[in-house]
Length: 79
Image 1 (cartoon, rainbow, N blue to C red):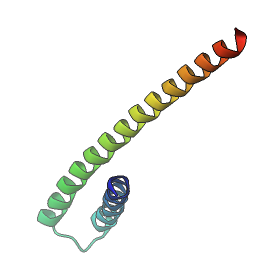
Image 2 (cartoon, rainbow, N blue to C red):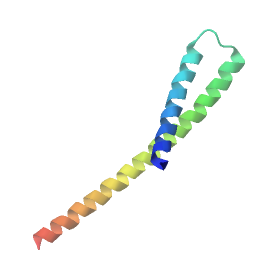
Image 3 (tube, helix red, strand yellow):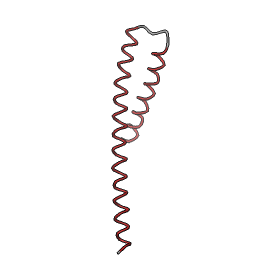
Image 4 (cartoon, rainbow, N blue to C red):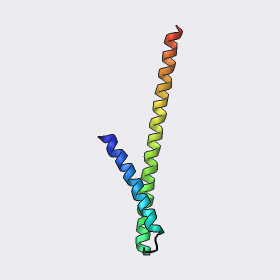
């Protein structure tokens, strides 16, 4: 369940960023609200970037494990 909640959380953050972007582009928003939304968007962006960096590190680790496994497998057959 942890993986699903992380995925949903990331997707929810992206959806909220899109919503904030639309709100900021509208003419119906006052300055204080715009600043508040902009600040929220910055925080959400940081969280999304961090999640993407963590995912990238995990993928790099998994690739390395697969490469190590393939190398070990080849050595077994070469003997």
